[in-house]
Length: 333
Image (cartoon, rainbow, N blue to C red; front, top):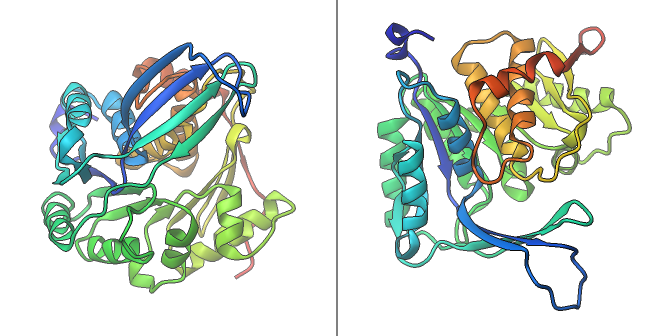
């Protein structure tokens, strides 16, 4: 994108309704029921939308408009997020509510190479805070904006809350990408067509849960995703961990597979994939490039701690390593 065209770039807004301060503790080995001595302890701004905003800000070039981040923050410990947003040059449109933003604990087991998450409950926004958020979205997410709704809902918000937000954003002409799970995802997928997002990013387990099916192969998974596209969702991206992702629209199904990588930390790769999807949409990329961009963001994020992406060269270096295959012929209606 050139400097002249930057003024025509769509606004990018990430929404994190239930953010957290991620308290990451490294252990030599996690042994339940015993006392541990941590190797290190780090606290960072967290939450799925925060992670997406951080990756997109690292990818953004200086002449491009800044990423906008909103949602709810506890006013008593907002400094952790304010410092992060300021350092990343992300526009802070978070609504402050009384109290402390929750902490999520991540126990990194060096011996096993995996992570145990302990997610604490978040703050409960009041109607006045929801009204303030609606005002932010009405201001920041106009025609053509790309809005990412990520993560769980805070206590007190009904399971159909995302559907109500999406319906409003759709009326404003924004394109919405939803990355959530459980009842909030099921409520959206069972809702009215005018409250469906433009794209969703479930993993296989989340898609099985929301569809009531169990998939024995890629074809069944693609058919379930295609059925959602027939209902009005533009793109279904099914993340498959180390096996890559499946990208399905009404017209295509692409299976993307990264090379086999051995990395110590995989936290945040799914959020980076969403960021890559947004970056490709901004470029108005063809489907194969969308898949390569999303997977390259995820691969480049591996091993990076916190809401951070390496430089553009490191991301682009992943492109040719991605295997992108088209699945069969067209689907049955």
